[in-house]
Image (tube, rainbow, N blue to C red; front, top):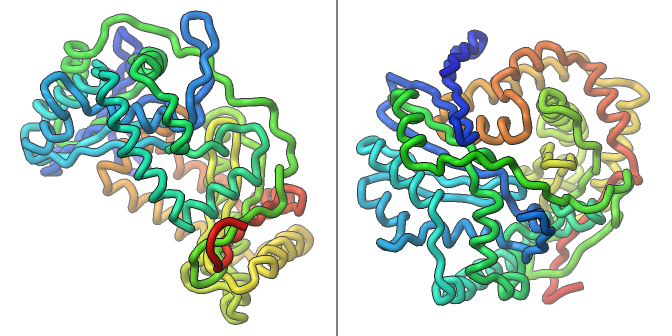
Length: 426
């Protein structure tokens, strides 16, 4: 195995590529009483069109999330119950770009790891169980659709993007999941749940070589190359819709403003853009910015207002939102402040404070075994090394943030979605 020392953050990582193409990462933590394992595939809600056996397949929206639910089924019962019976805390999630299965435990780690690798690599579906799951997931979808926070964000994605499948709901719709069959799930598992399209990340007081040995024993031996997938037609630079929204039973208008940017190039560039985007947005409208204080004093936002940088394969965007009595005024103020910074620049002292604060947050996240494993998997799938962030922070200065805001904060790249008080849809 290859041993990697990150001296600037005091972390050690072991890495190995198995013969079947699986990439294994292990963070040894001899002083920790808990262990964490994360087994993930580069397959998420955006991957509905792909090539299998030389033919292009169009699968229903929400199928990656549906498959995640059904993967816990085994001929012997339910793997979730098997893991819980040992005292482990298991779970799974599906995002736009990845699906991950994980557990944490303080005892019987190797038994639990064997269970995790076994049920994720060997699918077991019946038409009866798939049909039964449609009712369960249908209820989950209805609950999500009744959530104003989810609605305002999903409407924003539909406004920002015309073609990119990031605009698809990860859970799908009640109508879309009705088309899912056991055979569709088997096809998706065959396409994406291959070792070369997956990664296993472990952190805790474990032997890295033994982790690899167990993976070699349980997982398929054949190496299959990742399959082609279609992310839609090319996106225009401008947003699809500048305004979007509906009415729901909310106390006050709920807004989300998005700024559509360009996805970075290779993995290193992606990480740099992510860190820079976070810093620039904090300087623009973060809780320590002059604009935030101004909007708060005027009663246009409250303490729940937030902002962030987000990216997925082929897309990147900024978001800012929360409750506001005048969402349009907040949007206009952010655009005006972005233009002002482009002309006059940022305060050096403010930028340095924000930079130190952001760096501290990254360092504190290293204390979480879950964060180590999940971020390592996401970094691997996007071709970046997440633990090189100290060098990136050291390379960034105020002018980088100014250039970023000057390029990104433009009216034609901006969308505003609002959930307004009322009943039903607008």
